[in-house]
Amino acid sequence: MKSQQRLPRPSRLVNAANHVFPALWKSRLLTSPELDADAICEKVERQAGLDDYGSEWFRRPLDLLVEALREEASLSPLGLFGAIGQLEKVLRDRLWTQQWLGEHPEIERRALRRPVFVVGPMRSGTTRLHRLLASDERFSHLRFFETISPTPRPGFRHGETDKRRDYARRILALVHGLNPNTAVIHPTGPLEPEEELGLLVASMWGMKHEAQWNVPTYGRWAEGQDATPAYEHMARLLRLVGWARGEDDQRPWVLKTPQHMLDLPALLRVFPDARIIFTHREPQAVVGSSCSLVWNQMIIHSNRVDAQRIGREWLRKTALQIERMQHARERLDESQRIDVHYEDMDRDWRGVMKRIYEFLDMDIRPALPAMSHYLRGAERKRTRHPHRYSLSAFGLDQNEVGEQFEGYMGAFDLAAPARLSAARKQPRKVYDAPAPAYARPVGGWDAGKRGPVSARTVTARR
Image 1: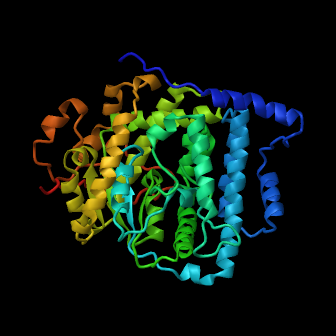
Image 2: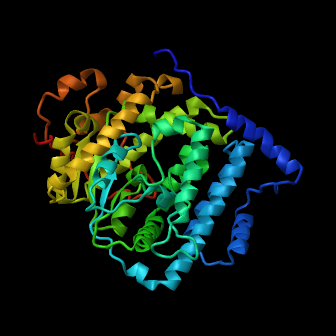
Image 3: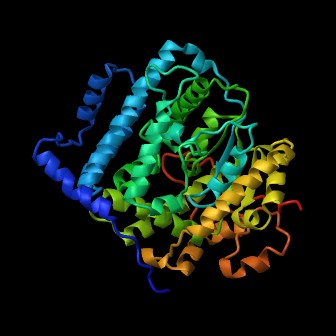
């Protein structure tokens, strides 16, 4: 194993906050926070003057998440303050959502026409591909301020300056101040294209919680549940976002978040005409980068962060994402799915995007200038502030990770880094492969209905 990379430590601002908050609570300048789901709901309802959340499905994940935060997450004072604030905001937005839907029933009649989903493991190039597609004005996409605050505030009127943008700027400034590495790992801005993870968080659902806090009990429970209600609420929020913009509902949405790897059956129940672009990257980079992302988020919120635990958990979580994806994708007609390789995008992004646009039955030419502009800016940022990480820092070894994902790498022609340049000179194979050894049915997820995995991939046209 290579020498272990030194991991970032909590910033001075984080350490200062962890001294200030207890003093504020002790002096009663701030009310001492209480991690109790019922108390949090009651406070939000009292402040909002509302009590209708819509579907009550979110209550069970809320209860389990709060319990895990209390018992497992080792929250620091800053982490405790932030966790309760996040939960209160999500609940308040949910109350406001029901108010808007009740006042404007036309919102739920809006179409969600043939959405395009970019689906891949964390750190597999989904952000790059999503933002390339989002640069095409023929698609609708979420912006950062809309994914953290999908619901307009009461009193919002079309055409007015949206206060959610200012809130998003403040949140970004705070997070980047608490840990500047977060801006390197996932650069964004209030108006930048962003994934819809926040729309799933509105149902207290998703890996976002596990990437921010150590909540294994919540995570294991969620892996065995049917996420359809969370995706149904996500669809409502997409309609609400489009309505608030005054946007034509015939424009297809382009969407992405790694959560979809775990929840493809639910996604397809709610969006049956979805077109899926699957992204693939060699697993050593996916796991190492995922661990780095998780570490840099957890050190903001927790007193004790265990790098080895992060390594083991996100190796397991990545394997589960890939297992679920491989099985669920076979229920999709080939006309509904396409595969893209991270390294192919590095080598020939125009060729890959041309193939994607042929799959979408669209002319790529109007989109190319905006795509080129986005990539030039992204490359400048990446060159100035590269994201550095290592498997060894999390107690993992490249060979160990490679062996875990041997079946996946073979099925999708993902060469190990040392063989990558030579392998990419060969034409990509088209063949059927049996399910990898680690792809076993997971209880509670359509066990027994799976057939063999057929991995059909096509090289980019030149």
